[in-house]
Length: 320
Length: 320
Picture (cartoon, each protein chain N blue to C red):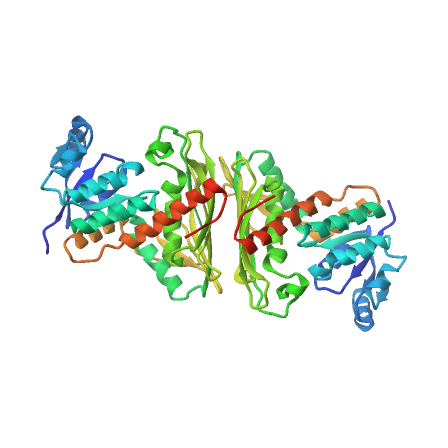
């Protein structure tokens, strides 16, 4: 067996807890370092989580020779900048979703990864879960006939206007935080859309508190979704084909994992999706697996996000 | 009590059965005549249903002095033409939905009704059902907070390409037959949309076998729906507000009538919606009630339908 992969956490964001819990289950993953802009905060976090190195700046983490993989959980607007810095420091990077809202910037990140001979992956943890694989497999195998319509939603109430997801300067917004999952799921099942149309509900902070979208995948296959920080909790994915309907009731969080085909429940294994994500990326770093999500997927994501924001701004449909 | 209103059926379409069943429960409704382009067919239909007069042409029904109200269940493309003829013959007209796909034509029909001093109503039977009134009342009273998102679907599999709903020359299509309900429901809860965007899946016969739409009602209130003849059976309406979610599982057919607010079931009375429709229109004819649906509602409907077809044809959003 290969030596465990040594990870460093860029930031002390709350999402790290999920990654740490996944890492604890993985024999091939060691979280060895954490960074904060505040040394005291890094020290406290390292102590609390049993992490060896605590760095008082992001630069210091990148200079840590012990770190092989950087997990980038900074706010959206800092994803690409710090991923590029980490890649240039010789690290592999697992970067939280969404990587960015601008196509050109994501291309630059992957160009850097290729130039540096390092791996870069967008952290869509749900894509690693067996529930997701099973849903995609069922659709691919024709369980609902010819796929014709996708329908999803992702929403919850975020009342705190000071939350990073509500701040335009940090690239917050419902499409960035929630809609990106709806896009990812629909692309997984339907491929890349040819045309998109979107409308947004702007919050007092200036981000999209809500977003609704229509995607045309060509060949008579359509997608619709809505998301929002100003709505009650809502989750779900429906794939509707010529002969049947597949439902994934909890597609992102994967609680009580199962898929329903025409009302019939199909159970799937309950495995921690963060564990699967660090295992996959670690194996890829060791050359023992392909990263599940690479450049093509990340660019597909940001092309739709950028096009939807352009559509919402202009009032016109945008072709891709 | 007033004398029962005397109705004549323009055509022997299958939907007549529902109207006849509603009429049998109504003491104020007498179906006294039926017309077919074929005298033998009219005779057989009249005998089978206990109707006094059988006419071998639509013109003959309009000339029948005993008929006060014409129920127009002809194919879509003949709705306005024969409604206008009936109005000009001095009849009140209950015309099946959708009245037409062209705004100008529906305006002409209501102009005729006003000139002739007769009533014209579009036959959206579900609008008369207590389930619909209850849903609208709950939304209006704030049961889900501020309304922000509507989501509906209406679909079933129609495999017969010779069905009138599959023929472009009779103004068939999924938006006309099924989507019109989604539009009607969303307009009832949200008012008139300011902008719409739609895409269609064209059948081999040339009509839209499937349609997906996004409606922007202004003020951050959006609607999405899909419909199709090439999808499995699907029905449903969700109204999502700032604080809660209202679901009407069977909004058109109103079976097991109830509304759900945040998962809590609210039962409503089970009354035949066709009965309520003929009672309402009959009372309006006698001057004892207002018709539930008049010119403004029918024009709202056709404005959205026309705009959606224009959007699907052009690929652009259409402002109303």
